[in-house]
Structure formats: structure tokens, C-alpha cells
Length: 298
Image 1 (cartoon, one colour):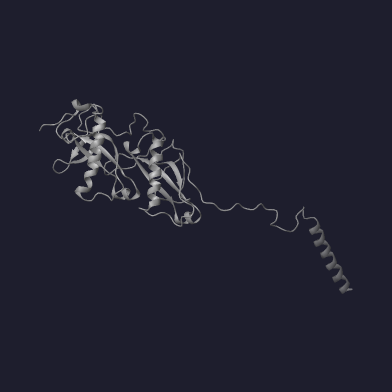
Image 2 (tube, one colour):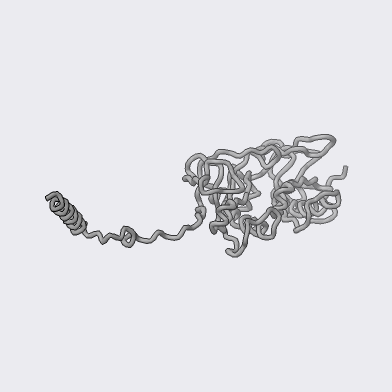
């Protein structure tokens, strides 16, 4: 009797299990074959025309990438995103041909974005790169970032601004470099330049950007001579006076090349200023001609 009851109980359990399997709601027992395949992992690429509230960093990770609308307070604006060759095995090093090429592309794109050579304003251009893990995952982008500065002289700090820099130098702009008042250091050399209104008394003025040749950073006095000659020629065209041997007797010149570190990256833009060591004026000297910038006899 006990053996019969045991057999009957086992039969009932089996029947219940079979009924449960028969009412699986359409499941076929394979828990994986009805799921769509996940897309392959890809590296992120930054967007153009967005801003970052944080300060610029040379290396950008996905976790640190937090784009915001440029209408809000920010420190960095992305004006272009380019790409390196896919076959390159590692992130380009400072001073490499690839990174200098990236800077050259950013230079052109940034100037087009702001409406003039970005160096004509209180702006700085920088190139950001993916992190090592990002590069390994397939990231091959470089990001062209522009920031507004308090000054283009030493001890500049980043301005927290609101509003895009697109076309910011197209026409008159508070960012644009113009008339300056020099502050001297030891002797008669110009130590710093302070922006002033052209209607006020001043002794210096921004005249343009001279592109230095692809040579090592100036180290000796002789290395600086081409920079002064190049800026002096810009000065002559800006004022409208002959670029001849008398030009040095009309005005002094102040040159502001990029720092050695930026030079290694590929920045060759030299900011140039005329400088009146013997007098001040109360108007811009742009187009003033020989009457506005006469040959000094003393």
C-alpha cells in the first residue's frame, strides 16, 4: 500500500511539472535568443559649438565631458573637432608633427569661427586630446577650444563668460585688442601693455599678427631680429608709412610671441604693437600715414 501511494505521488508531481511547462506563456525555454544584439562599443566624440563650465584640460575623459549651452556661464567653448588617422597607435606627443598639424587646423577654424584672427582679441586657443583608454577604445579626435582672457599679457586669467564667441571679432568688439598704455620695467623697455580707450592718452597700439617661420623658439638676440622685422613691416602697413630704413625712426615696436610651450605645439602667431617711446597720442594711428607717424629727428 505504501509503495502504491509513493508511485501515485510521483506521478502527480510529474503531471504538475508538465502542466507548468505547457503554460509558459509562449516562452520556448531559451532565455537569450529573443533579445536584440547590443550595438558594438564606440568611443565618444565631442560636439562643436558647446561649452564647458570647467577649466580647459589637455586630456578629456568621457566622465569629465559635460557640455552645456554657451548662453550660460562657462570657461571653454569648442569651435572645431578634427580627427587623427585611424591607424595611429598612440596619442600624439607634444611637439609631434601630428599635434602641430592639429593646432594649425584649429588655428584656421578658430579664426573663422570668431570672425578674425583669434589673436586679435583677448582669446586663447588650445587643443584637447582623448585619454589613453579613450584612444585604445578608438577615439581619434582632437578638440579646438577657445577661452576668453583678462589680458594677453603675463598673469592672464580665464574669464567666466556667458554667450558664444561665434563672430565675436567680426567688427567692433570689447574683446578686440586696440590702443595700449605701456608700463616700463628696468630701463626704457616695455614691461606690460594696458588696454585703454584710443581717445585717451596712450603710447602703443596693436597693429596685427605676424606669422613666424617654423624655426626653434628664439633664444639669442639674433633669433629675435626676424620677429621685430616682421612686426615692423606690419606696423608700416597698418599706419600707412613706407616699410623702409626710416621706419625704425618713426616708431618703436613691441613683439609678443607665444610662450615656449605653445611654440612647441605649433603656435607661430606673434602679436605686434607700435610703441611711441617719446610721446603720447589721443587717437588711433591706423591709416594715419607719414603725418601721423613722422620720422623722429631726435
